[in-house]
Image 1 (cartoon, rainbow, N blue to C red):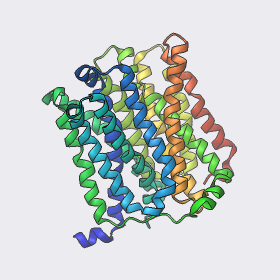
Image 2: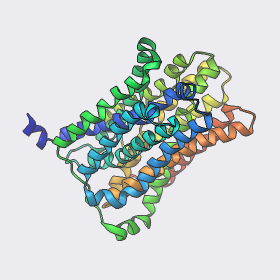
Image 3: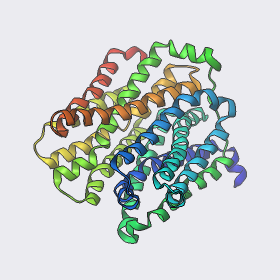
Image 4: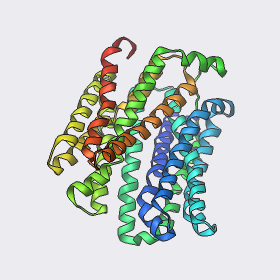
Length: 395
């Protein structure tokens, strides 16, 4: 059995699926505890914001730097290191606030550790799947990214169940339970073969990539894909609570959980029909549906319809991120690790800018979140224009 695993690229893909669940855990567990951490350790909203910024900023930094060292040390050591840091970060999140004199400093160190792991996973997992000698790459990529959605949904649902049944005061134990996933997958990656993409090495290869017009088109696509997704995802819980007047538990289940489940469903559906439906056509449909969901969220006066719009948005953005990865891999030969790293960086910038636009505009118009959402519709609109005007570059 072990010998079969060591030679099976299908097991490599399975390990990559779990890798995206690990990334979902490190990105989505802590936000469920922000209120608890604030009251337990007397941490201010500003300090909570710093934790968010550090998590996101460290992942951006890893995206930027990884193209310079991943190829040198190898994919397998890098992906093992990523899982190790994710596990250590989650355990540290549970232990360091009480062990250090300054709880905030302990949380900050823990977040930094698992953010490095999460950033490495984002850069590594997609190119590993792309490098595996398998067919139907678009289907594999779409299915791969669906596991981030299932991980996101699982973190919300299982954590909520734990808090209701065991008690939120035992959150440290839950953090250590979540650490079992990266530890287990680390062991899995030690067994499976880990291929790497063949790409041009060094500054010459990166310089050639940066002068490629199609590459910059894909960068714009990734930025808009990330922004279109997170502009709604990050505000879904608040929208549910404010619009429907429900509890935090119900708000989380009706908002971000529904968004994540529908986004994952979209990726699985495309994985099933990828041989029959061209990727560009599916993305065109998705972008048009995304624009419709933004209009529904922004312009309806019915809070239930607004919540339905959030769910539709989750479904519509599902294929945009993995679809752009697949387009880039086909259109740009020899892009290698650097290409995936820069695309991940662009996607993360989009993930930051989308919610930022919603928040900034909402604040300027007296807290009207609908106007913020309406303004953020510029991101799927740019994607639509790009798909329409650059047909010959998109496979």
